Image (tube, rainbow, N blue to C red):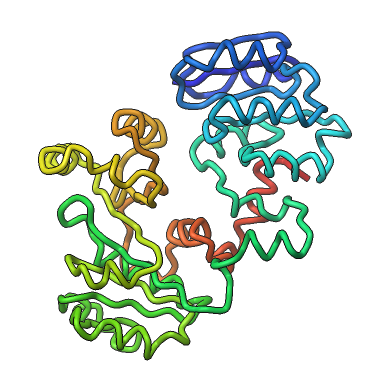
Length: 328
């Protein structure tokens, strides 16, 4: 369920096609809003910025960001000269407020497709030194080694690895590796996909360290786990697989707190994902639906890759978001 705080934009917010558990109208101080919702469970908060007293003072939003979860906030901006300025948007981003728009279409879009930093980076005003820190290790000139591992049984790590490489190859020098298995043979791509034993993996990575990215289906190899730089854990969110995971290891999600957990082959909608996050006390990095392996271009995979920091995969996405959110 969602909460709405409305003021001047009430007409927009009363007609949203989402479940609302609490609708508040009027203008409130930041302390009043914090007190109202600090112990209140909700999936999303849609906040009309004019409902916040002194909202043109960025310190007001800063106080809100410290006290409430900004991942749940969708901020409906007004047309005030100050809050419409690039400098104001940049300050919002610095405080972790990534979901902002000026229209109802933008609210629904962000409700279903929440922004990450990568989606709003173009609005963030940084000097050269800060920019280098933000993107360090993302578009830097060295090989990224990404591991893919099933957290629930048979969650599609091999195919997921293949599809990642398939999309990455459009913009990057990318290859895929499966460890201690031979399933890549069935994809008929011997130039980009390799089957390597655990004992040979280290030498293979060293030999290919001039690549932009190596994606590794680690399977059950402890050696592979030790060689990757970053891990993506796949969960197929069916009832039987989730319950089986909890039966085997009730603390599975707690042990991966802060890691990248992806719901794969998922038919869950955004509301379902929020409820599952609440029940599992976990935060999921991405909700990936079933994919058609025969598609020549899988756009949802590009969205996932751009969230990982592969910015060249964003082609067409930036302008599309600008138009939907009505920012400029």
